[in-house]
Image (cartoon, rainbow, N blue to C red; front, side, top):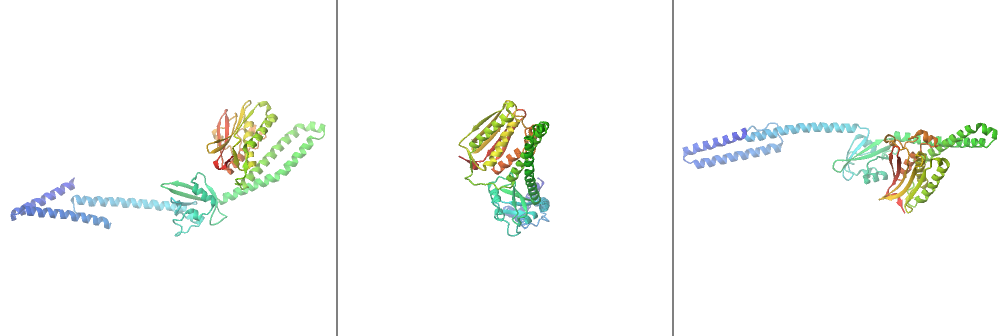
Length: 434
């Protein structure tokens, strides 16, 4: 308000001066017009000076003209100083962010809407062999020419990372994951997992080799035990219980070895994606159903468990029949082992929307939420005593998980303690055939 009061006082002073001069010379209107034109020209000049001062950017010393124009100069000057301070802070933060990103051991790339590379850090430069002045704006799938990565980039499902070889060196293994952010932007993170990959390969080789070496001795041992059981009646009668326990544990060890070998084959065998490899699921489930009834008659007749089969005969899958049969058998066998007496095991095979679902529902002990996270781990048991008594290896659900992963399927578990569990294998539309 003070600046406007000053402008009004200045204008009135000019008018009074013009009146005095006009009175003296005898032409008041002329003097007033000259004063108004001079006042307007002065303000026009100040407006021009302000624009020029702003355009030139030389804001170190604002013009000291007083009044409203002085306030405008001062406002812009203070605004510029605040802007410069914010700019300095942002530059420092950006430099700090760039230094932090460059120091990260993981390679990071910023991708645009079309997948073009906008910028990257030092680790990405070495991992992917980027060229500083030539690869900006180039689509990342033109540099990383791996079919798995191209499919991953186009599908847009970035919940899980993928594993690829580095385009610079095939000996380097990278775990790559894309994170969407902002307006159609994506952050690509590449991690060197060469050491972990080698350790995993060593573990797989070790398990496969040990299991293979154990197979023959365990088979021979079982043969000798069975021969001893068929020997002299007096000898067999004296050692009957010991021989039965030895045979039982030998069979259990043999099952563990066979399951470990099967897991090793799943981990190393390349999945056959031949569309002609059609599995007749209804026929396979009929056989599994008969085997389940035989298992109950042999080992669980006193518990009076019933097995109900609901199958869509026209619904089949594209996949590996041996692997699918192993996974389905494991789920049905587990349901029988863990079910309470006089309960039902319901096997269902049906199509829901675009998905095919194989489910096994039992009336068993149920699974707690804490155990649900670990239930597919190798050798993990929900109820250890019952699993060992039944001869279980603790590898059944690990096999199920591997088989489903190889068939692009998911394992869905719904369970309630002391009520039962439902294990569902959900297969995508690409795996369904009729």
